[in-house]
View 1 (cartoon, rainbow, N blue to C red):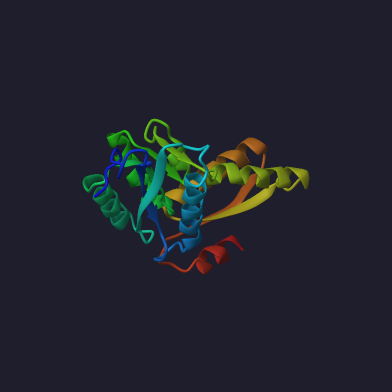
View 2 (view 1 turned 90 degrees about the vertical axis):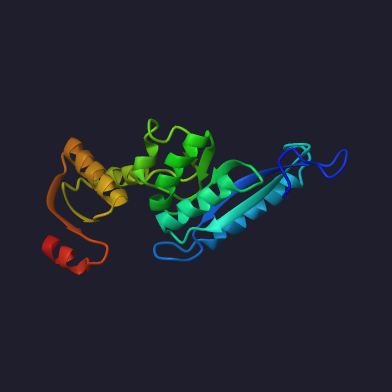
Length: 204
């Protein structure tokens, strides 16, 4: 296998390998376009002599299928097998990204996600080397409260799926509602394998 510092001959670009995690299928996500975009970005960089002159970026990726166990297996394979990976790109689903980012930090690797939106990933004490190109879901709900304020709506209901990503978001919504003078008139929760219809009926 070619190492990061190896060149085929004098003047050849040195290869820099990036470990990637994507979810092309599986429950919860199907975003193969992110993999296409990653290849396009690497091609753009590699073809521009003004960027990373003397180096060539390569992507070694795996399909995490939005499954934390599969994601961790991919990460350990990338870390244990040559060539050496200089950073980690991914993953798609927050449930995969969170354990991966906690592990990659132990190897002093930068990890960047293109899709994970969990508020938990904003904790710099736990994820000091993690960055993302898509904002946390908490940031995305702030405009919703601006709409509520604009139309002077004072009541709202909350229904949430009981996984970490959404429960953290629901807690933040309740906190924002309390500080904004908005009443939570009803709330309901449902498990992933449950029909949310019953929760909607409670709110109704």
